[in-house]
Amino acid sequence: MAKSSSSKPRDSDNPLPAAHDALRHAEWETAQTAFQAALHQEQTPQAFEGLSWACWWLSDATMLFDARERAYQLYYQQGDRRGAARLAIWIAHDHIEFRGQLAIANGWLQRARRHLEGVDDAPETGWLVLLEGALAIEITHDTTTARQLGAEAAAWGRRLNVIDLEAIGMALEGLALVSEGEIDGGTRLLDEAMTAVVGGEVEQLFSVGWIACYLIYACERIRDFDRAAQWCQKMEEFAERHRFHFWSGICRAHYAGVLTWRGHWSEAETELKRAAQELQTSRPPYVADSVVRLAELRRRQGRLDEAAALFAQSDGHPLALLGSAEIALTRDDPQEAEALLQKFLRQIPAENKSLRAPALALLVQTYLALGDERQATAVLESLQAITAIVMTPLLQAATAYCQGLLAVAATDYQAASYQFEDAVALFHHNGAPYEAGRARIELAQVLYALDRPEAAQREAEMARQSLQSIGAEWEAERAAVLAQRLTAVAKPSPLTAREVEVLQLVAAGLTDKEIAGRLSISEHTVHRHIANIMTKADAPSRAAAVAFAVRENLI
Image 1 (cartoon, one colour):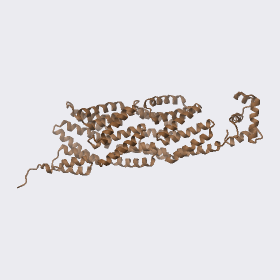
Image 2 (tube, helix red, strand yellow):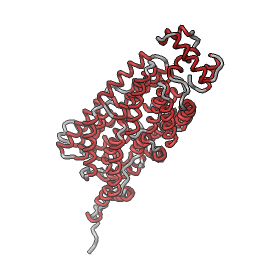
Image 3 (cartoon, one colour):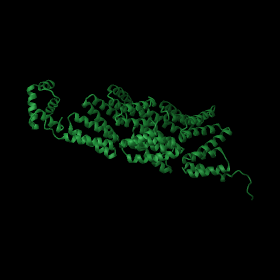
Image 4 (tube, helix red, strand yellow):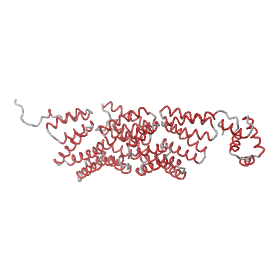
């Protein structure tokens, strides 16, 4: 029998089903080839749309934009308003992700909105709402808008039975709530969205990465290392089972931020370098997310010049402002630190509490370095107000640390010791070794001021060991110098505490009568103390006794 001369392919010859199957199984190159074969037979919007997703996963931006726009044009010409709106939404998303072109993205979003006018119960409306919410939290840090739009997108998903839309909407709302300090409500939504992923409910693989990234963003923001570790393990199992790699470069950068806080600096550096390489070739507008976190790692390592140069590369990124302020403070330039921190706070809405809190903690230290205790106290009150709402252990630790610094400024060393002890315990038990080491250094100095040299030396040595073990060379050296100085005074003093007190006043030039009045004791008692001091020091004079005490680090 002669073959049909019709140009239309038979169903058995149609490559589209195989192309979509390859897309579902994360076989991106196979899918790309199959969609191109389908387009060779017939140029349909569905085939161009499928090809665009294969190119999206392969980060083939040139072919991606061509395929998306061809699909959009064909849907529009066919009068398929939903199809045209759907492609307009994803073209807007791609202009942000691949090119950082917000104005062009906004134009496509407006076209999508126009196409959906009068179209009832279209999932595309929910996706449009979702993308607008994502832009709010990722670009403008507007948690209020993101929270509202995330909840609206999830409601669209539930009503239309589109599980991917519902789950991503919940994750977006969860991230916004966490950012605003509503930790319990936010993490419940994020956990539920992730459960939908690992439970196999979501249908699109891009939804998996989107939800996982929002969870990591939230964990990094509130330093919830345990939650991040648990879900990352689950996601690795999921990815292995489904034979695809869910970590995008953007997610990898945020996960590296978590690793940096945990003190896993070698792993963090590996992740950041991989993230930078991926983003440079696939998502250039997001390279700063990896660079700024590598800069923060360098700062913690004490490689300040490198860190400063990397922060400068990420100029405009909020975290670059924070890191640069830290460096300015380390280099004894609190005026520059204040300017950078105020700029940061102007960019971040007041509702975004978890993102503002680290800047406020650093601003307390900055005002103390400027000698402005009044301003430091006012900023601390703002930080305490956030802590009362957010109440994460590491934010409580940072607040206690700042309270300790203010107590030191007020020479209330006993109160300072309590605050630093709380900070050390919270930082240590919640997996933040760098911060714990720094708090131990402050605690050691306060204990020394309280005439507890042995305890002070012990804390300084513990700080040195822990900081050195993670590679924090700058802070480890600071702890080592302090520990060495305190070692000399940790040995038992030949003088009693009262004798040291008397000798300090002698060194200050007070007469016996003035010393007696200052200490509310008799002059006879002062004479006796001085005689005992000279005997113990084997000193022929008061001046020699003072010299002995200075030499032995007793005063």
